[in-house]
Image 1 (cartoon, rainbow, N blue to C red):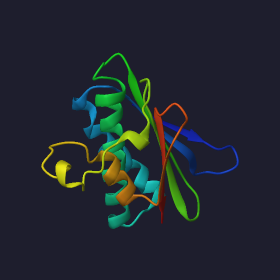
Image 2: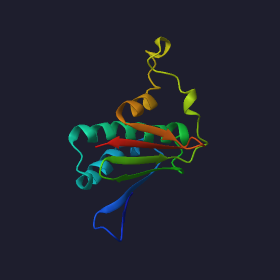
Image 3: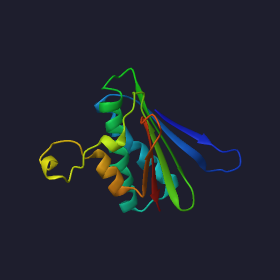
Length: 144
């Protein structure tokens, strides 16, 4: 479900919101959503790609780890743009986690693991990645 809020002061949307049920089959909506949003944001292809990788990982983590694939729970993505950056917030309904406890996928013992790279990719593609105190909302910033 796409929701667009308009500022009363501007003709361009101020904030875009995607609200999806926690099912992996819905992950394709993230890419569709950001391609639609990019008609307003006008990001170059390489910046849009970076955003898509990071946000898809964050939504995947919210669906799988945060909401335990419970389709009755939702993951919400909010994004906005100012002159120099795009800010994205991804929130799930889970208990949260401590990002300090995430293992480094580049450590030798983790190199062959099939998962565990989402947070690493988010940090690699975005200029800033922070979590709320509870650990169930990530805020990412992409410089444009």
